[in-house]
Length: 156
Image (cartoon, rainbow, N blue to C red):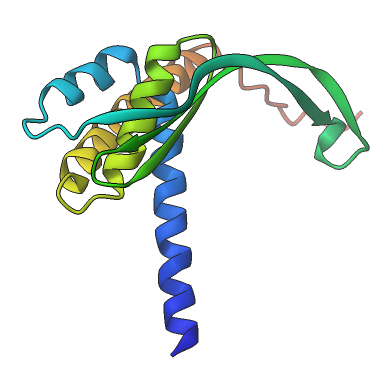
């Protein structure tokens, strides 16, 4: 019985993590349109931020070497509490505090059964855009690919 509950919790955490990843990649336009489309908006109170800061980016050569400090990256984050009690967090690369705030709001809304479907629709929209961008980049890269081949030569 305990294993089933843990598996369910793990699935919920993974689903929320994926949702937060998509919200971090969403554009301000996508987030704003989705927010405007919600009719019964709960009141939103800031808990932290939105604020901008720096994080140290670490890397490994070849994925297996010793870690080293690659440099700093600018990030924005926000934490909000909805009037219904849910707390949401938003973190993203860059300095767009409005995006961080909206990402936090949608993370909180994702935890609400009443708004989950609209947030999942936003997730699907962002995922579709990201997939299309990835396909376009792959096609552009494939167009520049050079296939080298060796012809079998006769024995010398």
